[in-house]
Image 1 (cartoon, rainbow, N blue to C red):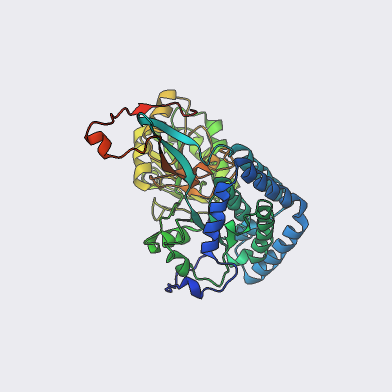
Image 2 (cartoon, helix red, strand yellow):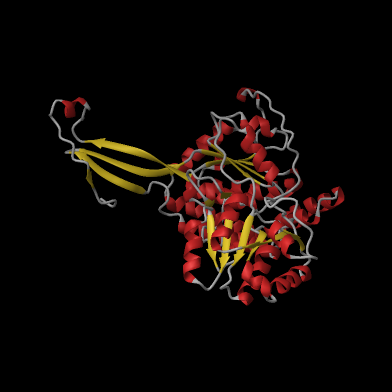
Length: 451
């Protein structure tokens, strides 16, 4: 989730009546979202299925638009890792379609689901149900595949959606947006999702607290941090850094550890769930494990830095890391030595970003200790940090990964885009005063959810 980003945001006071862009109509987006809410779960699922099918049947035009973006980006000197993120392929589109169908098939009971039901008194019943948040603004960079993923999640959860994509993917985003509109047209909710023109300033969007309920930035740490800093009135969900750790305990299966480290660092080094720091139990420094890890990483093209304790142990070793709290986002990582499991946990709490942490060990007590005590959104045992992903979690996709502690945490799928409301129904026209003068008696009786 990284790319180049100019953090110099220009804020303008926006008069909605003065915006003439046909692509940017927040009021229509809210109306479209409210229409989505009224549809049946089956209708919303059908819309997402249609979008998934269009990704395959209209593959040629999507790839043609994407090639235009790739050609322009190459001419402009866009970095190779970012070109990879920008690129769409038949395999990516097939995977996208599979994820969207997963969203459709698993979201039937999300909106309007009863969470609790209480009989307050005779003839007076209260229930709490799930409802959409409202209007989401998702700002994303480089990756055009984010557009159909986020659109599908918004449709399935009944939210209105404003999408602000990076200019490097302009052709791809327009082509994909056409398919989203076509899918929405099958249920009469075309306005529920809109692609914001690149002409609108991000500052303009951040000032529309009356029309946008939640901002979700997906991109570089600079982008996310800047949005979090500058959005004073609209809540922002996301994370600014992905400083993920893999800790190899003294009781680890070392072959298993090598495989997990390779995947966590090298599978997709630019991803926010890639390993940035490798922690090694000090007892493993006596054998061949450290040299085996270094040789593997060097073979994969990874540049290694050493933490303070590792530097003390080695006469000749990797250059020292400038800081232990750093997200490399590339084929680079830091290696540090820890005394024990608790030392690893303390290191993670000191230098981590609360994203994803891994312990590799065959010692169940140590594993349970790590899983219980590490205070991050995702904590894994004997599995790569790369599993911190909405699709891999079975959510179909994600709007992002949240390290916040309120509302949603970790990969955010459909359920993370819902809030609740209370519905109170009276058979007798109850008044609060009825309970003061003794006409009515409080019962507060818990009722079955499926009543």
